[in-house]
Length: 273
Image 1: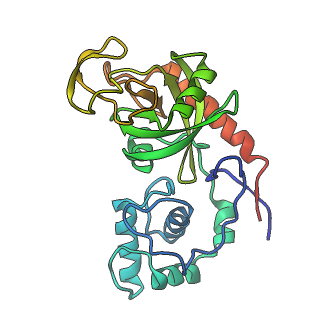
Image 2: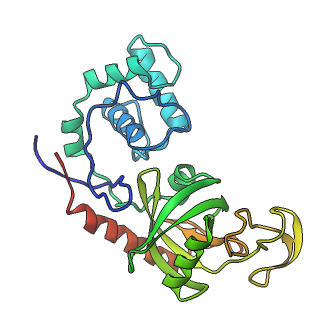
């Protein structure tokens, strides 16, 4: 089998290679809400067959994927339920050579996925991610807790907060390039480390006084408790916007590009065999 340069990365931590085998027929059924490499393989196969019309195989099983699977099932005399179970997996594997498909499948962006069209669904609220600072290589865990124009995030533990402070040299609005690993899907982002709009020792969502970052009185946007952080921090992605002024900040987008280039560089060391 020929070597293929990886143009999209789906990795865990520092394990920077993976093997694309045929779509699994023994794994649990894939359905709406599923995410990961198996979903991406299904999307790639459906795209090759003309059923999946979205621009990229995101690894997130949303309604576009559900409807694409239904169309494939209908055309192939399968139960039309939008779920990729044993029979649908088998039918896809019979019609698509994943090895050949991967040789021609290239993403135009290396991890820099659009926030509004893709990332907000790949990384939904109340979902954890492993974040790596590009310059230092230090890693910490976050939960996406709030945010519509970008991701509002909170460290899971005091140790995670301590790691963040060690990277930024304390709490800071400095933009830094980061990679965000959500169930193996690696995303290019730009993070600031200034907690705001919350109080750690007060109930979440309730209206409180003296919120961090001089936010004054309002809803307590601090969901993760006992992590030594008052409020949340921000991670921006491609085309994401600020909440207050609703603008795309070039300072964040430059860091997203930097993280994307880092992912591209690391992918050059990876082969799919």
